[in-house]
Structure formats: C-alpha cells, structure tokens
Length: 288
Image (cartoon, rainbow, N blue to C red):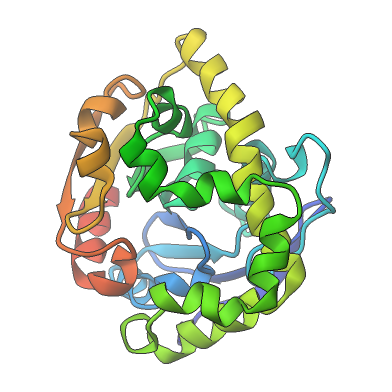
C-alpha cells in the first residue's frame, strides 16, 4: 500500500500522530478516516490523488491505528474533535502546509468539521462524507435512528464496551471488515489495531466525546451563527442509511454552510474502499 508515500510520526505536544504523506505539484489535501479504520482506508484513493498532482496527507486520528494520544479525561476532552483537529493542524504545519484542503469520512468528518469551524483561515475547501453534524443526528432521535445507530449509545457506557470488544475484537469488527473488499493489507492493519486495548479505548472515547463535549461545541456554534464559509462538498453512500434516517443531507448542511454542493456515491458505507475511482474523481474535481 501507499507506494511512493513517506511514513513518519509527528509529535503534536500531547499526541504522536502516525502519518503517510507525499508531495505533488498541486495543492495539499488531508484525508481523515472514520471508525474503526486507519489511514490505510485511503490506500486506493490516495495514490490516484497523488497521480493527479496533489500533495496528500493521510494521518491516523488520535488514538486510532498507530497514533498515540493522552489518557482519557473525565470530561472526554482529551479525545474531543477540537483536540484531534488541533493534532491535524499541527501535522499539516509540520509538513510545511500552511493552508490545505480537507476531506473526512465518518468520524473523520467530525474532526474535519471542527477544524474548518475553528480554523477557517487554513482550510481552503472541505469535503465531508457520510455524515451530518453530531448535534443534527441527536436533535430529533427517533426509534429508527436509535435502533440502527445503537452503537453510539452503547459505546458511551463506562467500561462495559471495553470488556465486550476486547474479549473478542475479531468477532466484533469482522462482520464489516471483509479482507477482499478492504484490501488484505488494509484489513491486516485494522485487525492489528483493534487487538490493542489502548486503541479500542481511544475509539470509544471518540464516541463518548461526541455525545458530550462535541455536541455542546456544535450547539454553541449554531447558537452563535457560526457557518462554514469555504466551498464544501457533501458525499454520501447510496447503500448506507444516512439519507433514509435524515432525508436529504444537503438540506441539513445548508444550515451550516454558505456554499455547499454534493451527491450520492454508489457504494456501501466505506466508500473509499468500495468505490475508490468515484471518490477520487469527485475529490479531484472539487479540490482542483
């Protein structure tokens, strides 16, 4: 995977972030993965963007994969999207990029959203994939949403999910992690990560932060009238349940953005693995 990319660890102050990156003649793009993936989820998309001339940055989020973060905090702030966004900004700056474009999928999209809201001067363009803001998910919880996304509320429980997942991480994660679909090296990297109890704990803290401090931060943004000013692209998987549960994602994102467009990608949830050509084409056209 990632032939021609450099790998390194970057110390951001209270975290060590593992990152794959390469330089191209075009503008830089940072790609942020979702749960429970690592930066390897981009192994088909990133080389296509590189071949299109972009500089590409693929970090593991704080605590995921090979990135190491601090111990959890009682209020979950150590794994808040604001803290993780600060990691990503530090990584970009350490690699020599004062401004860059940003794409995030799933949990990575929430980090991308927070980075763009907190530091609009550095994010040139923003692509958000398979998501609406956390606070929008939670605004009107329906039985359908609670049933389909029950894991959000299970992960929020103290200690119990760690015991359940660490008892047999393969059984927990394998149903949505097919090696042939993911790519065998990508799958092996995921399996190695989820066998690390520290990674599992950090991933759960991501969700705990989402229901508490991250939700509060988003509600404060909305109350203050804070909106995304940069051009924003929304992509969602046609065979996932985002549209079924929430309707048109663009209608929701228009409350948060000043310049938004988007469309469906024919795929299940992990679109970078299942529809890499379509994802790379959409990102290339948008970020060019």
